[in-house]
Length: 276
Ligand code: URA
Ligand code: SF4
Image 1 (cartoon, protein in one colour):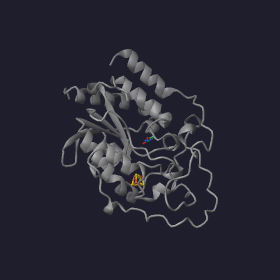
Image 2 (cartoon, protein in one colour):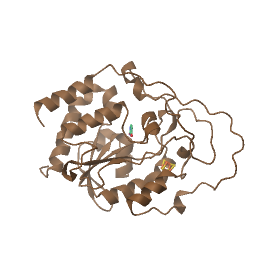
Image 3 (cartoon, helix red, strand yellow):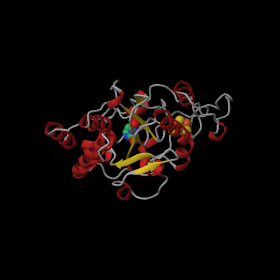
């Protein structure tokens, strides 16, 4: 990691001028759930976000027109009843049509994850935003651009074919929580088995949790991010090492933390090089 990379990374964190996305762009096709419902209002407003961060405060979806009684389709599959395939193809198929929690009612696309299936580094975010919901890929919005820069700073990218430098990126929940709210505990629970299976299949050498939601979920903790960031933790029965850092969306709102984020990136790099 040279000075140029560092400078580029820090500069990116300071960038102010981002073009907001046009509202409604996420509504390209109807949600695939059996029972469409009007989008719930956001559970809680984001902390005040500067104009520059607007693109990340997602455009609100247009309320859906009153739906006529939906033709009786198959009842939603409850998570308890789900068989979670132990192979990538099966897992992708199950997630694509999943109706195990209410987020299926408002999503456009499920967002499975992206990257190398045998990557030594796995990044876990919170859940899709409007851009990700529209495109079906994690971290493609403004926070995603910053994540890509963070990865580049440690010589990695989501498109990397060399398994040594590869990364797999996934989220705690695979469907977008409406109105940019946090995923609710029942949604995190319903989606738990998919992320667990992804980790089992990737077998990363290191998991990086982005932000509080991912950290608490992976570490089964209710400690604040400030307590979880720092030490090396272990995930589940496999004992996979976990490091916690700031979510890139938070960094965009709080550029004061950028220096600490750079320290985290160096630690992640060292851990992956086996020098921690
Ligand atoms: N934020 C996340 O946590 N995940 C995404 O995929 C996009 C934004
Ligand atoms: Fe299924 Fe997860 Fe989407 Fe809920 S968030 S519907 S559990 S894929």
